[in-house]
Image (cartoon, rainbow, N blue to C red; front, side, top):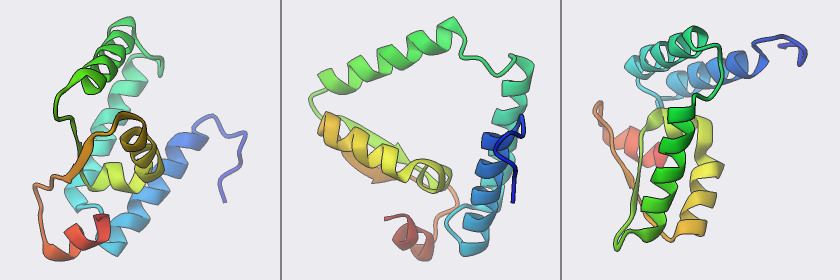
Length: 113
């Protein structure tokens, strides 16, 4: 059990969830390394959203809402960490969702869908 007051609580919870999903086959082992690389950048920038990242987020939202045929592309890590959020984004935007896996197996596809 990770104490809620731990300074890295959210990061550790995400890591545990990814590890569990890797054991279940939803996340590819390579996805664990990819997540770790992203967290390393979080450390380097002080775990704050940069101005350019916030602008990119708003720009992506505007493009998603204005697209003629918007598609949200989901991989194993996204499914493991943000399935409910992706579903809410899909409902809000009307976009289609695609599962896009580099390490693709039928079993992973079924689990993610």
